[in-house]
Image 1 (cartoon, rainbow, N blue to C red):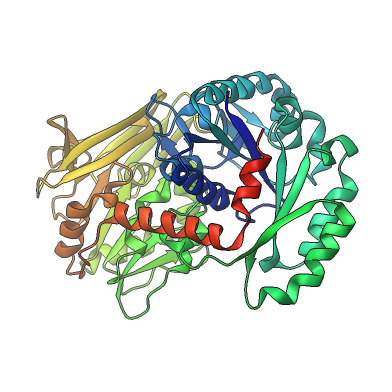
Image 2: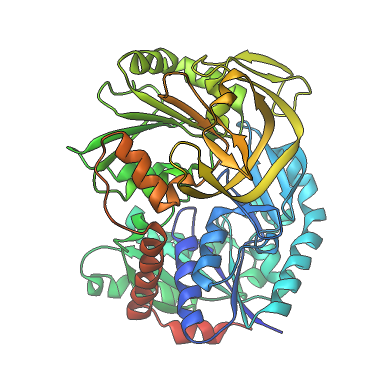
Length: 482
């Protein structure tokens, strides 16, 4: 039976996911069979697993760091927000319901069994299970029905290490405050802490570090400087994509939809030296000098069509196309490019039909069945291979499907406009395929580098593990696992 260690955070976005990934790579180097686990995740950035389900993309990255295929047991409960107050609930990789926040709170206790089942299966297959918490254990108002932090740690008897993010300020109060507000039995599960994202001379924090140890009686496992190569790893939040600007290069813009989903399609583009990847935020206009506009996936296609129009992006897109610009829609973005999107059963929201952007002569009807596949396709024009995945509901058809974007098992996939400048496809992750990415960008007269995307990600994971080994007590952390 494997040992386990849980990494929780003093807050959201403190670096839990990356530290688990780095520790997984460090443990793998030591010869451990290590598997990642997150009891509950909330994300619209999902990965398709080897067993045909979906999990949070952060756990897929951690699986890559551990050298294993992603599996639904690594993230048994996934929440995919569809509105500001409701989310799709995925359990063991499959949708079971859509619920509002208050409804989900009453449902959570019944999901603990599913969480513990997955955890037990992972322990049977591993030497070490690295568990990532969600949010913060300081959210004591949610403790009664918690399955993601101390609720899980107590039920599964997994020791906890807390991460504090010094980059956002107040890290002493974050960690000491958690000890103050959480239940004494929960506090007893915490075996230590570490400080993340430090910039400058770490000795300047010596007094603060000792104060945290003294006030909490928790052991410190080190101060981790800011990891400068984090941007080379797949982004967990779409906002991270907007930090990779390279002014002076060829612009590719993507729309920051309100329910943007599975935006890992963009990760390889941000690493291309010749590409300036521009996030068009709400209230901003699409720049007039972009070569390509990408409409990414969405968890609520009709809702995001309304959002897109509210920003005036529909007008900008038509102007961009009239100027000779190119447009690519992926998944929900592909559906938006058509003439209409119908949801007669109210699967993604209120039943009804919404006019599309009309840049492709296709229509979409939402269906209950979700397509979840890992596939290898061919770009129809160039025959370059595309390793991708499908994760969508809805069926799209129409005259422009006679000009497919790709061939999947010999059958047409996606659609291309008669002028060849508007493309739509359900294939996610398409730009991770190096030869296709090089060819596609080359056709837009965008210079490309001779680089392997997956090799770049592997190199960054190795560098992350090296970084953690250099600054944290890795042996001490692994010794905590039980």
